[in-house]
Length: 374
Image (cartoon, rainbow, N blue to C red; front, side):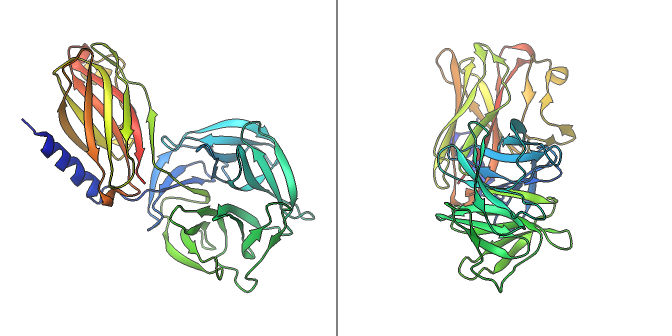
């Protein structure tokens, strides 16, 4: 019999290991891919398909992530990005060509509307609730591609002039360091929660790179190459979250629903709980690093043809698993407390519960949950 202490030790070892990099940035690319990026190394991990023509990224005050998809030179969609699956959903149609997005008050985001050969780029406000775009004013620059609200200051990145400061009331931009232009062809600016202002995208040789910007002198320091992310157009930090995805199949007493409670901060602990199981039955907690591939199988994987189950799906790769018994009440729950060591800061992983009980295939599977640790 595996003791609870040994289960905790096994899960703690997993989270402390090198298998869980600090995938603390969400990235959108022009070719449609959604990526996870380690802000301390530049390492890239695939997340989801996104949509082609994505050109910016920002998080609204309610935590939702927004981008824009280009359909043609005069038509676009504001899209909402799911940080758990990397799926982009078109929400608001617009004719405004937005090249940068940044957090703003309430339902609003700040944006940079692309100029023309005779009109410079403009600062606008985009209402995520209605889809409306309001012009604030001209920036006076014509190469702005990145925008970020950082420590109360609205910064922009111009591919020719480098770091700019934008007046939030008038839209006018100024270049505080006119002798410093910085790396070229970078198109993503984001404010990290640890106080850094980050810059990312493709350089003049086509290699996407990640930099840290010094706002006191405008200089950029290379963090690393973003190998596997081509033409990054938007970066945004991920806050701690536990996002459910997929649908569980039936346990003895109904659909198995997995939820997470507790702390998602490094040094804390979370509790994963699934419902509607048979009492006093053996189950397993699956911890996975991928939701796209497990061994030779593409995820999500319908398990019915393999196991004889009914509407059961594997959502997360089985990189580690621990055994737990369900409770004694009816219907029973499967619960597991997972400690998050200091080494888990910035880590991202996925949970799914499995239970051995008298249902088709003798197995029930929960939905998945994508966990982002802060």
